[in-house]
Image (cartoon, rainbow, N blue to C red; front, side):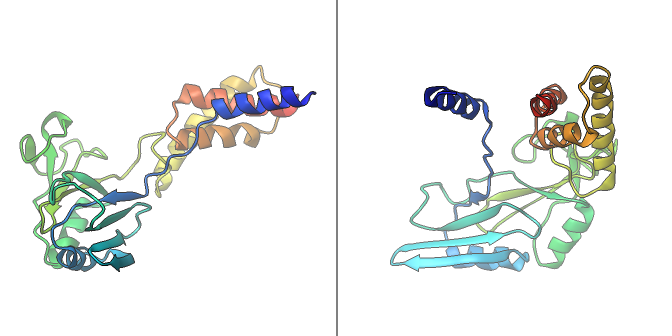
Length: 228
Protein backbone atom coordinates (compact mmCIF):
# COMPACT_ATOMS: atom_id res chain seq x y z
CA UNK A 1 0.00 0.00 0.00
CA UNK A 2 1.42 3.41 -0.97
CA UNK A 3 2.09 6.22 1.47
CA UNK A 4 -0.68 8.27 -0.19
CA UNK A 5 -3.17 5.43 0.28
CA UNK A 6 -2.23 5.05 3.94
CA UNK A 7 -2.66 8.78 4.51
CA UNK A 8 -6.07 8.71 2.79
CA UNK A 9 -7.22 5.75 4.89
CA UNK A 10 -6.06 7.43 8.10
CA UNK A 11 -7.82 10.64 7.13
CA UNK A 12 -11.08 8.80 6.42
CA UNK A 13 -10.87 6.93 9.73
CA UNK A 14 -10.28 10.17 11.61
CA UNK A 15 -13.18 11.90 9.82
CA UNK A 16 -15.56 9.09 10.79
CA UNK A 17 -14.47 8.92 14.43
CA UNK A 18 -16.47 10.55 17.20
CA UNK A 19 -14.21 12.31 19.67
CA UNK A 20 -15.18 12.38 23.34
CA UNK A 21 -16.24 15.82 24.55
CA UNK A 22 -16.34 15.60 28.32
CA UNK A 23 -18.05 18.39 30.24
CA UNK A 24 -15.84 18.85 33.30
CA UNK A 25 -16.32 22.43 34.52
CA UNK A 26 -19.38 24.69 34.84
CA UNK A 27 -18.76 28.41 35.50
CA UNK A 28 -20.92 29.91 38.26
CA UNK A 29 -21.01 33.75 38.30
CA UNK A 30 -20.84 35.19 41.81
CA UNK A 31 -20.49 38.66 43.33
CA UNK A 32 -18.55 37.68 46.47
CA UNK A 33 -15.99 34.92 45.95
CA UNK A 34 -15.32 34.24 49.63
CA UNK A 35 -19.03 34.08 50.41
CA UNK A 36 -19.62 31.65 47.56
CA UNK A 37 -16.68 29.53 48.65
CA UNK A 38 -18.00 29.30 52.21
CA UNK A 39 -21.42 28.31 50.91
CA UNK A 40 -20.25 25.54 48.58
CA UNK A 41 -17.59 24.10 50.85
CA UNK A 42 -20.29 24.12 53.54
CA UNK A 43 -22.18 21.69 51.31
CA UNK A 44 -19.21 19.33 51.48
CA UNK A 45 -17.85 20.17 48.02
CA UNK A 46 -14.14 19.45 47.61
CA UNK A 47 -11.79 22.39 47.07
CA UNK A 48 -9.60 21.70 44.03
CA UNK A 49 -7.99 25.10 43.51
CA UNK A 50 -7.93 28.68 44.72
CA UNK A 51 -5.61 30.86 42.65
CA UNK A 52 -5.28 34.66 42.83
CA UNK A 53 -3.22 37.32 41.12
CA UNK A 54 -4.05 40.98 41.62
CA UNK A 55 -7.72 41.52 40.75
CA UNK A 56 -8.03 38.04 39.25
CA UNK A 57 -9.11 34.95 41.22
CA UNK A 58 -10.26 31.45 40.39
CA UNK A 59 -11.82 28.89 42.74
CA UNK A 60 -12.70 25.35 41.63
CA UNK A 61 -14.83 22.99 43.70
CA UNK A 62 -16.27 19.53 43.02
CA UNK A 63 -19.55 18.12 44.41
CA UNK A 64 -19.22 14.70 46.10
CA UNK A 65 -19.16 11.90 43.53
CA UNK A 66 -19.28 14.27 40.56
CA UNK A 67 -16.98 14.04 37.50
CA UNK A 68 -17.81 17.70 36.78
CA UNK A 69 -16.60 20.66 38.86
CA UNK A 70 -17.75 24.25 39.27
CA UNK A 71 -15.56 27.31 38.88
CA UNK A 72 -16.12 30.87 40.08
CA UNK A 73 -14.02 33.88 40.87
CA UNK A 74 -13.12 37.32 39.53
CA UNK A 75 -11.94 38.49 36.14
CA UNK A 76 -12.74 35.50 33.92
CA UNK A 77 -16.49 35.66 33.19
CA UNK A 78 -18.82 38.47 32.17
CA UNK A 79 -21.95 36.59 33.23
CA UNK A 80 -24.20 38.36 35.73
CA UNK A 81 -23.98 36.94 39.27
CA UNK A 82 -26.98 34.71 39.93
CA UNK A 83 -27.79 34.22 36.24
CA UNK A 84 -27.11 30.47 36.10
CA UNK A 85 -30.44 28.75 36.71
CA UNK A 86 -31.57 25.14 37.06
CA UNK A 87 -28.25 23.34 36.93
CA UNK A 88 -28.85 19.65 37.71
CA UNK A 89 -27.35 17.72 40.62
CA UNK A 90 -28.28 14.05 40.25
CA UNK A 91 -28.95 12.12 43.45
CA UNK A 92 -30.02 8.58 44.32
CA UNK A 93 -32.61 9.72 46.86
CA UNK A 94 -33.98 13.25 46.58
CA UNK A 95 -35.60 13.23 50.02
CA UNK A 96 -32.36 12.13 51.70
CA UNK A 97 -30.35 14.70 49.74
CA UNK A 98 -32.81 17.41 50.75
CA UNK A 99 -32.53 16.42 54.40
CA UNK A 100 -28.74 16.47 54.30
CA UNK A 101 -28.64 19.94 52.73
CA UNK A 102 -31.19 21.26 55.21
CA UNK A 103 -29.04 19.97 58.07
CA UNK A 104 -26.16 21.97 56.60
CA UNK A 105 -28.23 25.14 56.85
CA UNK A 106 -29.38 25.37 53.23
CA UNK A 107 -32.93 26.45 52.40
CA UNK A 108 -34.26 23.71 50.11
CA UNK A 109 -37.69 23.45 48.51
CA UNK A 110 -40.04 20.61 49.27
CA UNK A 111 -39.86 17.66 46.88
CA UNK A 112 -41.85 18.31 43.71
CA UNK A 113 -42.49 17.08 40.18
CA UNK A 114 -43.34 18.98 37.02
CA UNK A 115 -46.80 19.12 35.47
CA UNK A 116 -46.72 16.73 32.53
CA UNK A 117 -42.98 16.24 33.15
CA UNK A 118 -42.38 19.53 31.34
CA UNK A 119 -39.29 21.12 32.84
CA UNK A 120 -39.68 24.89 33.17
CA UNK A 121 -37.64 27.72 34.65
CA UNK A 122 -38.72 29.08 38.01
CA UNK A 123 -41.54 27.65 40.08
CA UNK A 124 -44.25 27.61 37.41
CA UNK A 125 -45.48 24.13 36.58
CA UNK A 126 -44.25 22.56 39.80
CA UNK A 127 -46.60 20.18 41.56
CA UNK A 128 -46.07 19.11 45.18
CA UNK A 129 -44.66 15.70 46.02
CA UNK A 130 -42.71 13.04 44.19
CA UNK A 131 -43.54 11.93 40.67
CA UNK A 132 -46.86 10.07 41.17
CA UNK A 133 -45.68 7.26 38.87
CA UNK A 134 -42.45 6.82 40.82
CA UNK A 135 -40.40 7.34 37.68
CA UNK A 136 -36.67 7.82 37.67
CA UNK A 137 -35.66 11.36 36.56
CA UNK A 138 -38.96 13.00 37.52
CA UNK A 139 -38.73 13.92 41.23
CA UNK A 140 -36.93 17.12 42.23
CA UNK A 141 -36.04 19.63 44.92
CA UNK A 142 -34.30 22.97 44.45
CA UNK A 143 -32.05 25.43 46.24
CA UNK A 144 -30.03 28.54 45.43
CA UNK A 145 -26.64 29.91 46.42
CA UNK A 146 -26.29 33.38 48.05
CA UNK A 147 -26.15 35.04 44.61
CA UNK A 148 -29.31 33.35 43.36
CA UNK A 149 -27.73 30.74 41.09
CA UNK A 150 -30.21 27.88 41.33
CA UNK A 151 -29.76 24.11 41.46
CA UNK A 152 -32.15 21.23 40.85
CA UNK A 153 -31.74 18.01 42.77
CA UNK A 154 -32.92 15.31 40.37
CA UNK A 155 -33.56 11.79 41.61
CA UNK A 156 -32.22 9.14 39.22
CA UNK A 157 -32.67 5.58 40.39
CA UNK A 158 -32.45 3.77 37.04
CA UNK A 159 -30.87 5.35 33.99
CA UNK A 160 -32.33 5.27 30.52
CA UNK A 161 -30.31 3.03 28.18
CA UNK A 162 -27.49 4.95 26.60
CA UNK A 163 -27.24 7.49 29.44
CA UNK A 164 -24.38 5.70 31.17
CA UNK A 165 -24.40 2.52 33.20
CA UNK A 166 -25.02 4.15 36.56
CA UNK A 167 -24.12 2.34 39.74
CA UNK A 168 -27.18 0.12 40.10
CA UNK A 169 -27.31 -3.52 39.06
CA UNK A 170 -30.81 -3.16 37.57
CA UNK A 171 -29.62 -0.68 34.94
CA UNK A 172 -26.68 -2.83 33.91
CA UNK A 173 -28.88 -5.94 33.83
CA UNK A 174 -31.33 -4.28 31.43
CA UNK A 175 -28.52 -3.09 29.17
CA UNK A 176 -27.00 -6.58 29.09
CA UNK A 177 -30.41 -8.04 28.16
CA UNK A 178 -30.70 -5.52 25.35
CA UNK A 179 -27.19 -6.38 24.14
CA UNK A 180 -27.96 -10.09 24.25
CA UNK A 181 -31.12 -9.63 22.16
CA UNK A 182 -29.35 -7.64 19.44
CA UNK A 183 -26.37 -10.01 19.43
CA UNK A 184 -28.71 -12.98 19.06
CA UNK A 185 -30.23 -11.47 15.94
CA UNK A 186 -26.77 -10.75 14.51
CA UNK A 187 -25.26 -14.09 15.46
CA UNK A 188 -27.56 -16.07 13.15
CA UNK A 189 -25.71 -14.80 10.06
CA UNK A 190 -22.44 -13.61 11.62
CA UNK A 191 -18.95 -14.99 11.01
CA UNK A 192 -17.53 -17.08 13.83
CA UNK A 193 -16.56 -14.88 16.78
CA UNK A 194 -16.54 -14.78 20.56
CA UNK A 195 -19.58 -13.02 21.99
CA UNK A 196 -17.40 -10.57 23.91
CA UNK A 197 -15.99 -9.15 20.66
CA UNK A 198 -19.52 -7.94 19.84
CA UNK A 199 -20.72 -7.13 23.36
CA UNK A 200 -17.81 -4.80 24.10
CA UNK A 201 -18.31 -2.33 21.22
CA UNK A 202 -22.09 -2.46 21.62
CA UNK A 203 -21.98 -1.62 25.33
CA UNK A 204 -19.38 1.11 24.78
CA UNK A 205 -21.51 2.71 22.06
CA UNK A 206 -24.63 2.68 24.23
CA UNK A 207 -22.69 4.12 27.17
CA UNK A 208 -21.67 7.01 24.91
CA UNK A 209 -25.31 7.75 24.15
CA UNK A 210 -25.64 6.11 20.74
CA UNK A 211 -28.88 4.47 19.65
CA UNK A 212 -29.27 0.67 19.63
CA UNK A 213 -29.18 0.75 15.83
CA UNK A 214 -25.88 2.65 15.75
CA UNK A 215 -24.47 0.41 18.49
CA UNK A 216 -25.31 -2.66 16.37
CA UNK A 217 -23.44 -1.11 13.44
CA UNK A 218 -20.36 -0.38 15.54
CA UNK A 219 -20.29 -3.85 17.10
CA UNK A 220 -20.77 -5.48 13.70
CA UNK A 221 -17.95 -3.44 12.16
CA UNK A 222 -15.69 -4.41 15.03
CA UNK A 223 -16.35 -8.14 14.61
CA UNK A 224 -16.23 -8.25 10.85
CA UNK A 225 -13.16 -6.05 10.69
CA UNK A 226 -11.35 -8.39 13.08
CA UNK A 227 -12.13 -11.57 11.15
CA UNK A 228 -11.01 -10.29 7.74
